[in-house]
Length: 255
Image (cartoon, rainbow, N blue to C red; front, side, top):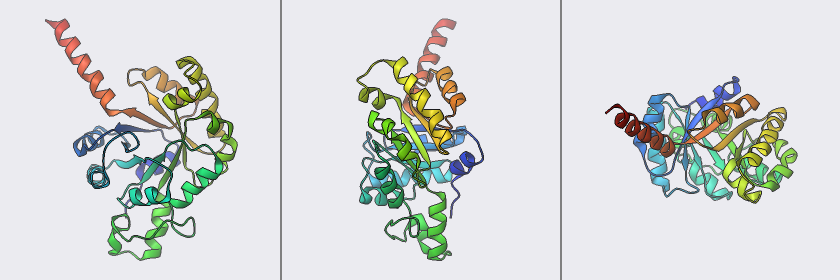
């Protein structure tokens, strides 16, 4: 059974960094593992990857020592079950706006006695080889990361209730959809709200993520971390674009 190194680092007080991968790309998972990123977020809310492809990307993550996490498309118990049964060590769940929703997600992601996740006995439990069922389910319960997204004004209004959910490990604040929910008031106003939410989440005893980060705005990301964010996502394609732009600019300037 595998240790969730990202969860362990968070619980030890560290800050973790993850690359968002939007389509089937096991090699990108491996590259970010080799680079020393803590996790990948396989985006299955907006991206086209199917479950078989997710499972292969999970294998890529396991082989390069990087935690495989997916942003799943919806809250349903069947969706949570099918994604976690691929061997993912965490799920990021969009548009979680109430404590009741967060609690249902946390229960659906864990086995008895912490929840009611269906028993599959597949790769998430090492196919039942060399490990007793009770031991396997207990280990999975302890290692899985359940990450509700705070990306609507309703979620901000209900933040205290969401913070009471013991099985929600990280609350992930996403700038883009939060801004849309606010009526797109501009970057400064969205960041002001995020700067209020981040310390509230940490004060409530949860880890807190920040998403929708501009890969070029390292100062802005660092400021979120100083405010208490300790789970940071950034676009893998955005990082590739910046590297490509910088290379082309620098070579042309040197000619």
